[in-house]
Length: 382
Image 1 (cartoon, rainbow, N blue to C red):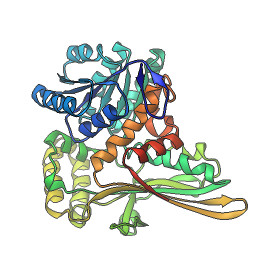
Image 2 (image 1 turned 90 degrees about the vertical axis):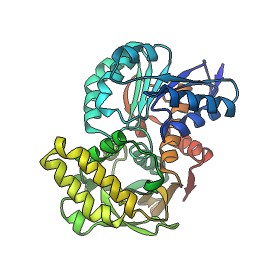
Image 3 (image 1 turned 135 degrees about the vertical axis):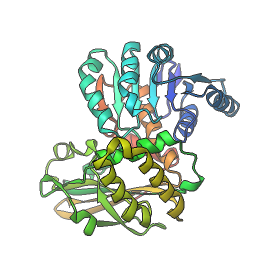
């Protein structure tokens, strides 16, 4: 019997991490090997990189539980063959354009699925497949990681602390030393392509409202403390936040707000990227991705680190009540991997496994999630 910390026993599982030797895949594999006795398959196009990491992890963790495998997401037969040998596939590679192929192969293999991609195209494909996913008895979890993935879960976590939760604003600050980071061109292209999905929506006065140009001219600020202090943030709609007004009756204000990268990228390059993608999305994407990466490499400065903060306000026992809760990790990729690992712990022991398509922020049990995040290295204050 395999075991999961904090949960019950499970039968032995094999987890394939697509993009497993990347910046997110590596810490995710380490978390899973530390927290479970499941077997992990490191998968990607480069068999050399996959086997090299597998060998390293097998020397670090007991049991020779890691294997390397070459998998090309454009090869449907190869996907089917790889997935037929595992119980869960976790997608941390920049492959949202191939979501239909990957999801179809997972369905045909009858396995569970989790991804960390933020993509309107991905979401539309998976939602169209939702009836098939449920009929197959598979559990598909999408929008994993820390954002998306945690903001709505944080609101669910603080809501029971209030008799009436009136507002819950979640914000992030992400400061990375981009010049020292090995990020492939495909990853950067997908990252910049997310600007096409960017919607500046926030829930205010009981309805979702578009921020528009005024959000650029008069941005909201949030005090993140530590070395970050007060930062400008912009509303960024996440699908997981859509259901908060239904999940938390009486709430009048909520939304997710994202902080900037650096002054040059925020005020000069980002508007240019958004305009270019609107005018010529196909032709402009790759050159704009190169420009965006150059601005990050050139102008990003200390302090580095990643933080999420929820500012919750409401009523408890007839009195005004406020909760400010922060989650921090110095490495943004680890901060992405740890919530995925914590979600998988709940999936593997069956406590969060439900047939159908689910958002990570909705399917997890938030109290256990927060305990596991803290145990796995996320610093939580508040």
